[in-house]
Length: 477
Image 1 (cartoon, rainbow, N blue to C red):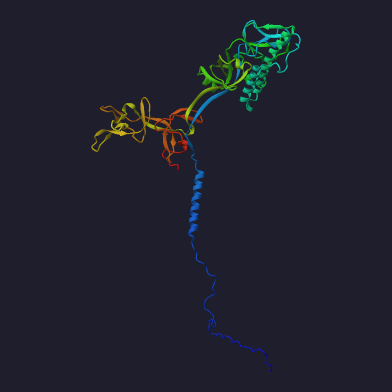
Image 2 (cartoon, rainbow, N blue to C red):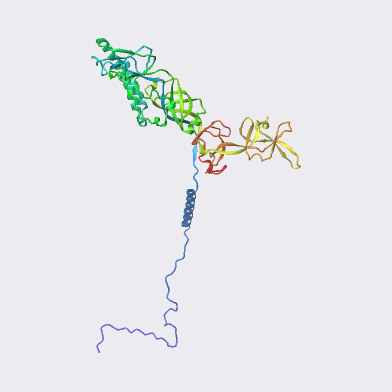
């Protein structure tokens, strides 16, 4: 038999004893092994990070959920509580009618005084030759007056006072008309043309604007009159044609004048307690005093402000904006929300003692020793405030019912009465400390306090904005 080139190797067979349940020889008796579990290791760094993170989250939640404590710094300041009004001007004035028709020119300037039988204006039947209609005949003083009117208007102009443009227009026209009239009258007189000169039948101040409200009295005032949107006034200018019987000029016969303002019930109550007020005119910041009288027309309340000066300054105005300077104060300015009130014991000033050796102030406080005997001991205490009758001391320095006495006297006073002092919470040291404030003036938003109050505050002190949010001695930061 031919044999293959490769030698075959026989593989021995494993025999298994039928009587034995043991595995074959060479096989393990352990069950098959699964994947090995790694031991759990704690990362200390992650634990610390988680604790810090949790702490921050909790504090943020607490911070966001509680009321925020705002702090302000005390500064010097002032409070001015004034009332702003639009008034209606009343004067002793009348409209003077032209005696004949023609072209009018004026001898007297707007706002100037004329004597009885003094010439006011000239009327010519036809427009005279040689009269001026431009600035060629103006003098240097005319230009100065025009420049003053323009400068005053531009200096006080604001978009909210756009209506002042009309007042500016009338003032400028009056000044130009006055300058032109002077030139025209000279031309007419030198030209030999016919004209009539008209004199005043009584003395007064001449005005060349009119509005039909010249005879208005305060008893005729109504609320509707304070709406100036539909208000119109007329102006007479030089070389203007006037018909006989129409208005030639207006004459004011008294320097005294008045302004009527409309009031709310609260304003009426406040002003009814006064006889004089200080007012400031918004137009040019002129300030003066005026007598005040509150009155009613029907259900509406008004005040009549009577003046004796500056009538000519506003001779062409019917409506005028003004400010009543009611009250003002200067000092340390703090928000009204920062004010808090604290109870103090009141002890008569007669019991206040000043120690001769130390110059310290306090009281002789009666105490009992171990044997029950009562004796007076000098007790130094802070006097937070003092008036003509009482000293105000902290309730932590004494107890209700304690007795204080006088030197060389059996007279004693039992502490029982309390009084309140106004103050703020100062936090310069990181916690709230009550500090007394002497309020000089207060409104709804701010108050002015004295700068030299014992146990008080100073400029740049830091205080709690809303005193109701904290308690005394509370740690703030």
